[in-house]
Length: 200
Image 1 (cartoon, rainbow, N blue to C red):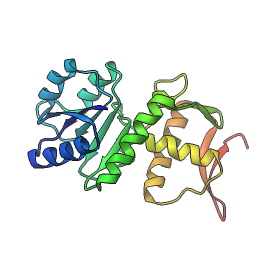
Image 2 (spheres, helix red, strand yellow; image 1 turned 180 degrees about the vertical axis):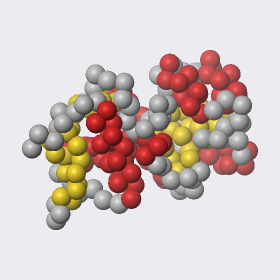
Image 3 (cartoon, rainbow, N blue to C red; image 1 turned 90 degrees about the vertical axis):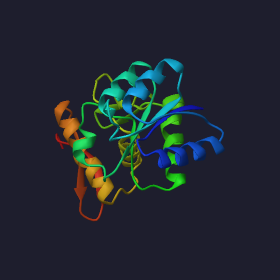
Image 4 (cartoon, helix red, strand yellow; image 1 turned 135 degrees about the vertical axis):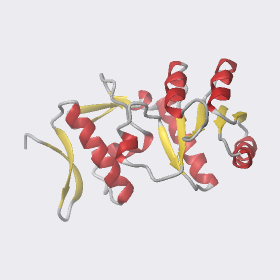
């Protein structure tokens, strides 16, 4: 794959570049948002990995530019992912909180690019998930790879737990509410989180 990688810390940038290059990817690097924008004409890129605090041009604006080029984006965060992040108007395909292990980056990159290439739509109650386009089908409401995985697990009746899941569930319920869907995610004693309908 050809990957656009941007981080303001040059040592970290070189470390990530070395990791991805060893994995066989072609990597083009940038130290700030303006360099990312200038490199975009040198694509096509299979994915972009951006630090959230890039100087000169913010990652939200870069996400919009990369989306026009159909490039999936992973944003590296220096804090935990919050519901505010997941409800952002400029939602990337995935967030990766720092610090992370090399295999965390590899797994997320594989997840995002695989969904983009071969993701099949599925229904979560009365909301259809367009996996390849990272959104609820027929809407502009975007989803991250993690939210898609959580909805798919709930759809299969698999247990979902943990703080990270609770943050995503809060954001997903708000997205479903804004779309006027009857489906929501609810905690049921001894059963865990389930997809339910507000009509039930």
